[in-house]
Image 1: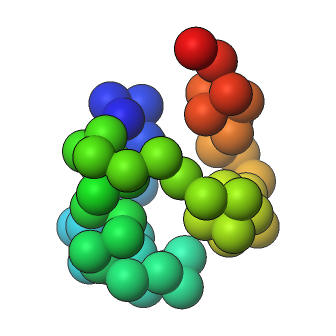
Image 2: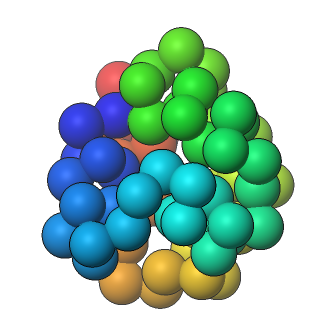
Length: 62
């Protein structure tokens, strides 16, 4: 997901740092960011809790 990658980069985080900050594995985060896996409700919840400024509605737009 391009918007997720752009958000991570805007904060100056590597994939590893961002995944750790959210409490998810690097592998899971990387798969979601690259679009190989859809984010689970748990992933979205952790993202929203850690980064409330990120608009999670992007995950629900087709």
